[in-house]
Image (tube, rainbow, N blue to C red):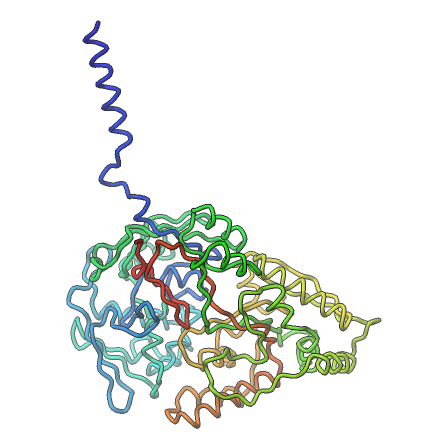
Length: 528
């Protein structure tokens, strides 16, 4: 009997250690980076992506010919080097010899030819296809006037790609860091079609690969060991959490669940600096928060005076200082600071704005006894709600406007804006796709698929065409200011504030560097 109990104790000890010790397949918790990521990503198809939360993840999963370093500077990606012709119309990219997809298959120039053609194929309906418009024949391909085979992209051999442009484009290399220019795995698209970008089927070429996707809960990545620079990646896993409440995200960060927040709640910066010193990072960011008018339907169609009245009746400093309080700047213009060094656009004083607003409101046929009734759509977010409630209150107090606030889930909200059949006013923001004023101004050209206002003006389109092709810096700056002034004179949108990037980062997470586009690749981060 004694021997029986002796062996029983040995068995229990062995069972304990076998269940408590980590197996080879398990990951040390310190090897996982936990990132808050605002809204649920709309898609992980690079060519269908258009939102910031999807872009954050796609930059980890994929890599274009050109990429960015931690400070946002251009650096070689899938292409180890490139050359540009003297006239700026031809780019020759030399791919790395060791490129592979996450499944181990070789990645070649043919994959980039296929992917660029797919991104511009009208059947793809890529929302950001216009970014690739500088490529020769791109617009004809987008419009269905020429086959994708006539796109100005060729491969002399499996490791060389040549891209020919319609006209010289100073920022073309920046465009190649955008998801619209990422390669996609053709075999998976052919086999799985619309399921090719699910957790079970997604094949990528970046530093990470998709492991699990639980909608509205988390999206988990694991290191892509086939990535050419995998040895420099620190974390073994990255988990993104879609969480549209900045206060909830902040609470989970304080509880130790997150290493990184996508934003900082309004008016918390003072408390954070006192109680969490060194963990808040506030820096300039090329982004503008605004309200868009649907110019294709009443009540704002053909009523620039009415649109201007609404814009002049709000006090933007109340929003930036009292509601937000994290360094945001009131927006008297569309372009954020830093894109143009000099401006002829002059802000108007608060009292004069309100007086003129009332006059314009009256001329548009409205009054306190006959108020404007309109709807304002915004996507789910405690911050968006606070701003919408505040602005609606200003309109009611100053003009008598009655606003119905409509809160919608992100995907529903985007589809509503695009359809232009139900919206009157909508919340929006624009974050630069590349560091140039044209990234903001081209949004409102008549042919841009992202132009949810329906604005169509020949003179404005002409100015944007000149901006996109001019290599004369002085002439170009003048055109930029004229185009921005035209946009504001026609009151197409109502700029509210300019963003700053706001993140909380745990003290043991290193490698963070602020940059104008707020792009932060997980492969540059590590835990000390």
